[in-house]
Length: 162
Image 1 (tube, rainbow, N blue to C red):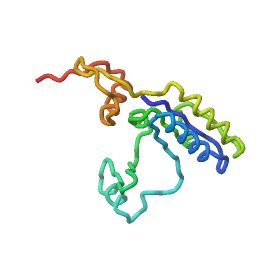
Image 2 (cartoon, helix red, strand yellow; image 1 turned 180 degrees about the vertical axis):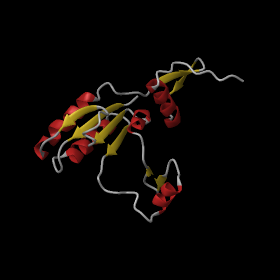
Image 3 (tube, rainbow, N blue to C red; image 1 turned 30 degrees about the horizontal axis):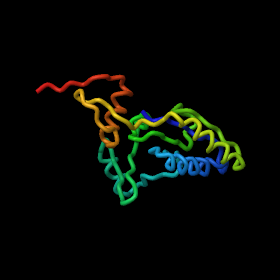
Image 4 (cartoon, one colour; image 1 turned 60 degrees about the vertical axis):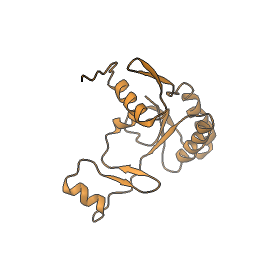
C-alpha cells in the first residue's frame, strides 16, 4: 500500500507549494505519486450531466476529459488502493488518512517539503510480487491496485477454481 501523508494548515499557508515541491523531488527519485486535494468548491453542479446521473441513482459517476478522471462520492479508504508509492493529501484535517504534517505559514514550504521527502524514504512499493508461484513485475497499475487491495484486506492468497 502507498505511504499516505496529509499536509494540513489554514488557507494560504503554503500547503500547495510544499506538496508541489515534494512531488517534483519524489518524481526525480523515481517514485510514483498521487495527490488528493480537499476543496470546498462544488464540482457536481445542479443541472449538469454528472448531477443528473447521480440524481438518477447511479452508484458511481465519473468525469473524464483528456487530463483527468474524477470520481464522485468516494470513500476516503479508496486512497489505500491507488497504484502509487506515495499519496500526498492536501487538507482533510478532520480525517486520519495518513501521517499529518502541519504548515502554518509560507516561510515553512521548504521545511515541510523536506519533511514529506523524509517520511517517504521507505515508500517504494514497486518490485516483484508472486502470482501463481511466479514472480512478476509490479509496475502494471491494475496489478498494483489489486495487490494493494489484497494487502489492505490482509488477504495472502486467492485461488480460482476451474
